[in-house]
Length: 213
Image 1: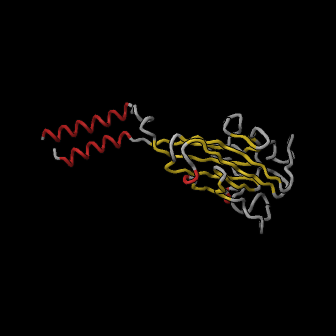
Image 2: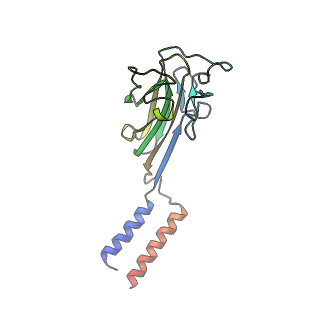
């Protein structure tokens, strides 16, 4: 077995020890996720307006009160030009490899990460708000927005802030879902899973057979 083959076998073993993991997060309300809140207190799951897109997988439409479906039960009318901040605390054990988020809102929302503006509210000029914003970020599939946010996140605690704006005086709500991929550190990956041990063993046996030849 030559030096190149030995090196390749060792690199394969090391590569098998390297692991990636994914953290997912979504609007679910404070009762389901203590990392969510808004400037008025707890974030609540709401009944969405019938014209909004269905909530993203694993998420709910949320707000500060029953502001989604109008004129049903204890519906709360959100006043014109009202803006409220919603927050998500995201703890990352390592710096991200990649991260993305999809956002919907009625009427629209601005996104800040660690106090840095990532995406402003949809423009008000030329926006008729027939249902919600006619531009991204809006409440419909054609006005939802998916953003690459990896460069805004750091190892440790990160704070996402959604400034949700009411510009037409009717229903009000927020919906989002995201994920972050990161490399597991040496400490976290110190004890490989049994399957990983098996793969490493196969590689070492193969290397031994090549040496004997």
